[in-house]
Length: 251
Ligand code: CA
Image (cartoon, rainbow, N blue to C red; front, side, top):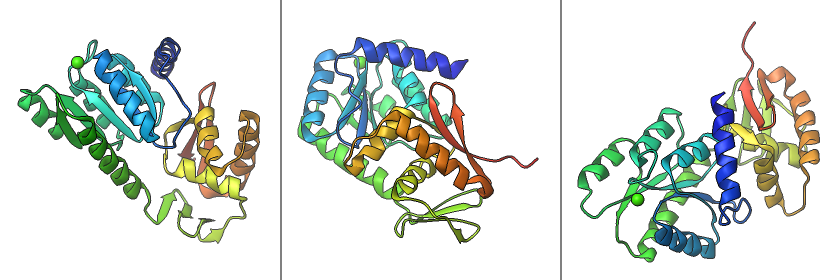
C-alpha cells in the first residue's frame, strides 16, 4: 500500500537524520535540499529563529514526508536527486495540498523558476542568497498560510465550527465540548480528509501548555467521536498511523 511505503521511507529518513526534530515551535518547515552545507545553514538559522525544522535530501524522501505529515512551509530545491523538485511540487499540488512552497533555483535557472511558479510554488530564491532574505520570505509565507487558515467558520458535512467564538454546532445545534475537545476538533477541521498522526496531535494540543500522552489523545478522540455521531462526519482511525476526519457517506 502506497501510504505505508511512504511512511516506511519517511521513518527511515527520520532515523537516519540527527537533525530530524518533531518538537519545537508550532510552525513546522520542511527543507528539501541535497547540498549539505546549505541545508545545515538553513536548518541552523531557522531553528535559531524558533521554527521547527525537518529536512530531507532527496525528492523521494520529500514526497514521502509531504504525503504523510503536515507542514506549514516547504523550502524546495528544484535540483534534487531521485525525484526532481518540480515533480515533488507537481505531486504535492495534485494531492490538493495548499502548503506554501518556496523554491530554490540555480542562479541561471530562469526556466525552472517560471515552471515552478506555474506549478504552484509561492515564491523563489535564486542561489546564492543571503539568509536574511530567506528569513524575510519565510516570515511572509508562513504568515500568509496562517491568515488563509484563520477564516472565521470551518464547515464539514453538517458540522460547523466558529474559530473566533470557539463554538461547534451540528445543523445549528451547539455541541457541548470541553476546551480540549474543541482544540482537537479544530485540528481535524483545518485538515479535512487528511490523516493526522497521534504524535502530531500531541504536539498541537501541547501548545496549550501541559503534558499529554498518546493514550490521553485516544480518550479525547473517543469522546469527540461520540459527540459528532449525528453530524454526518466521523473520525476514522488509520491503523498505526493516526486519525482522519471524514464525511459519512450516505447509505
Ligand atoms: Ca541540488
